[in-house]
Structures are given as structure tokens and as C-alpha cells.
Image (cartoon, rainbow, N blue to C red; front, side, top):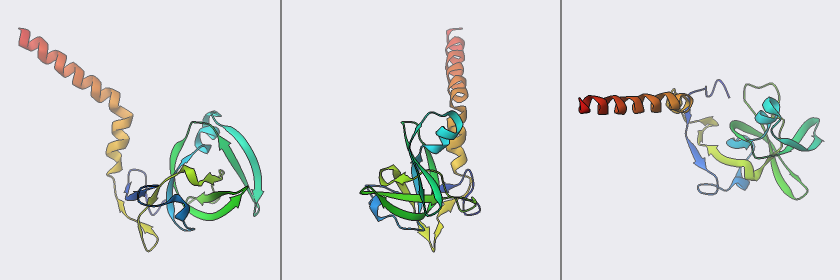
Length: 154
């Protein structure tokens, strides 16, 4: 989604089924959804359920539990076998996402002003580093308390 947002930016969002109905998502909205395709491409942890061609696009419906959140713009909506789906694409990506997104996969929608998301730069790095280095931080805290207890006993 560069240049509108970069890694480490915090995006202001509204939550699905709480602040908006996922069925109300429109073309042009920026959504956060649970994507199966990153794990399929990296580890083959999810299975392909359908492969279909829609408007000269090859799209896939995946199944499996392993998902990762992705934030991309809705470029199209369609109905297939009575179910609603969306097609998404990153603003800086040359092609659409390979997965046909079920409405149920949508978790959040970015709050935008004139199509641009409200972004707080760099704040997201706090959560990125906490998740990445949590075990180191916890280890240091435990070592500190153990060391403190040893000093108290002397």
C-alpha cells in the first residue's frame, strides 16, 4: 500500500460486525482481511479449494486455518454461488491478490479521508518489535528478578 502507508505505520480502522457490516464494503475501500495466500505461497499450509477465471483474472479460493492479516484496497466485488466475494490489490502492486476474499474474511476497514487512510507513522514498530523480541524482553525481566532475589538474600 506504499506510498499511502509503510511498514510500521499504524492505520486507524473500524471493526467488522461492530462498527460496520462487511457486506457494506465498497470498491475503493481499504480493508484488513485474513489471507490464506501468504501461507500457501510460503509453506503450502493451506489447500486450494477452487481455481477460477473471472474477467481475465485467475483467482483462487483457499481453505485452511493458517491466515495472515493483509491490508489492501477493494478493486472489485462479485457474487459466486450465492456468496459475496471481493477482489483486492495493494496500491503499489502491479497485479491483484491471488485469493478471492469471502466477506467473512474481512476484519477491519481503514478510516479514510478522500480515499486516503488515516495513518500514524512509525507507531506500529512498537508492536512489531514486541512480537519479534518478546522472548528476549521476558528473559531479561526474569533474569532481573532472579538477580534481585539473589542480592536480597546476601
